[in-house]
Length: 217
Image (tube, rainbow, N blue to C red):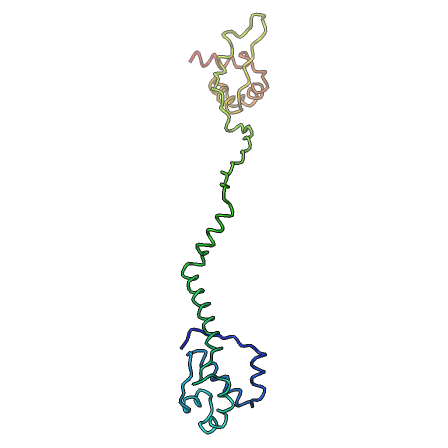
């Protein structure tokens, strides 16, 4: 069986040729025509022609003269041969295109290249990236080296002018608490002294009695 699964049907031509036919004659004619399209020929044996036309041999003998004039000699058809040839060529082109994966033909590629004879693709310029904004997260900023608050006494409890020296304010409450514990400040006094220390009001005199005990120990 042929791979030509469809055929052109010119409605005007078919109606013009079939205007003198009965329903049975036209049906048999179309069966014969479709067989010719698939196989490219019709048999010359009347029994086989009758089977293809879907009629009995007796019916075929009656309708044969009407149908036979629509074909060439020996049941050929130059018009059908021409249409089948066109369909064969179209089928081959589709098969070839499928093997190439739908790629354009060589001549099509050349014509595409010639449309840009002297132009070259310019390298794509990278877009400038935005300047990073300064990051001000205090968590990532370098922390100052811990300061021994005891050294901030600067050697004397009193300055050259006679004023009482005050301890420097620690970086945080935890450092302040560690400083007071290191000077043996009692736990019941730590909160009071811590408030003074964080306010910059704590002096060596305020913790002298406990620091003295520490030195004596």
